[in-house]
Image (tube, rainbow, N blue to C red; front, side, top):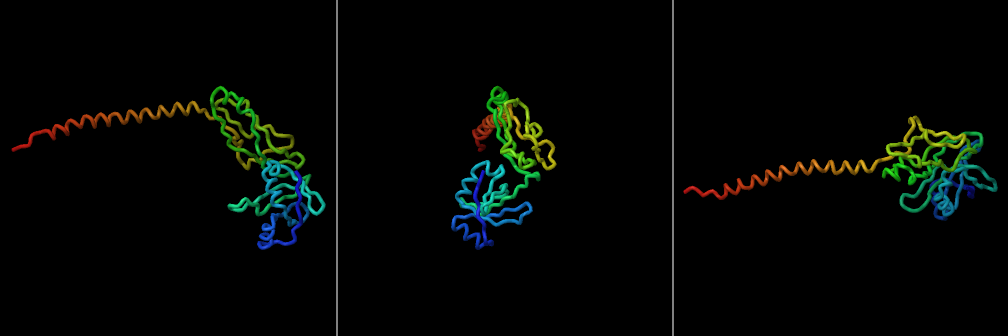
Amino acid sequence: MKFVAFERAKQGTGASRRLRITGKVPGIVYGGATAPALIELDHNALWFALKKEAFHATILDMELAGKEAKVLLRDVQYHPYKPQVTHVDFQRVDANTKLSMKLPLHFSGEAESQAVKFDACLVNHIVNEVEVSCLPADLPEFIAVDLSGLKKGMSLHVNDLVLPKGVKIVTHGKVNPVIVSVVALAAAEEEAPAAAAPAADAKAPAGKDAKAAAPAKDAKTAAPAKK
């Protein structure tokens, strides 16, 4: 994706506030051998670009001062309650340096799996994105996850993902994290009535004792008073 940025001469809280009033968003571009650059972007154009998944997970072409540069979106700050972007950060991309990036998972085939189609199971998505490490040229837009082979009691882990060439998952020390788990709904529904049955039985003796105690009370009340 391509977007246009403009050089920003002033910085500071007051200058950034004035920019936002005029419909601009202050930002910064850092990384690489070049010094960080202060930039500004059109708010509405940025707002609609941020709604696209590719803007968050792919290498972007930034046009600045008549030149193009490859960058990655690194951080976006929003107003606490207004629909407004207050600041944005981009990182320059070096073609020969590996980068780390969070990519969305695109799930497919869930409805056709044996777990859902025949065993009435629920497929629980534990995570919807993963962090990867690769060269910029190898960075995919997303990771595809085929769930058509899921069966009752199965779990899908990071090691089960089919990754593009040159892409590795970053787990930060976690051993083969779970991506998807299959939950048997039928088993949960059977346990619920079974748990309710003992509770009903426990109430029965109380009712019986109360009924038995009632005549005794009546008999005492009906006894003739002594003269």
